[in-house]
Length: 66
Image 1 (cartoon, rainbow, N blue to C red):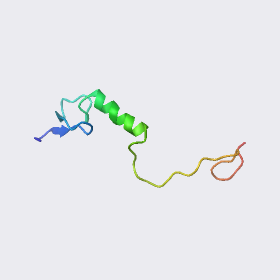
Image 2: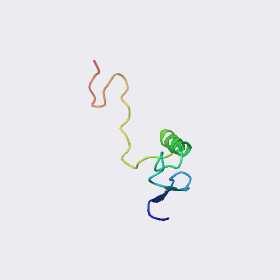
Image 3: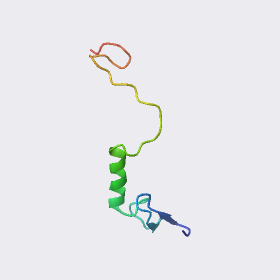
Image 4: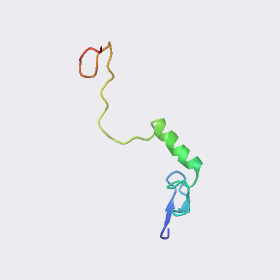
């Protein structure tokens, strides 16, 4: 790759950074494909597990909801 050229993270097509309207993606299709992967949880940022949801009217801190 030359200076100012990048590869689309979805399809690996090489594109010019300055003239790419959907950067870092090469097209709206690649941008939406990536978004769909995040929304369907195929991609995620590693971290601690989330706390379980509150049940029986309790808040996550053990207090009754009003």
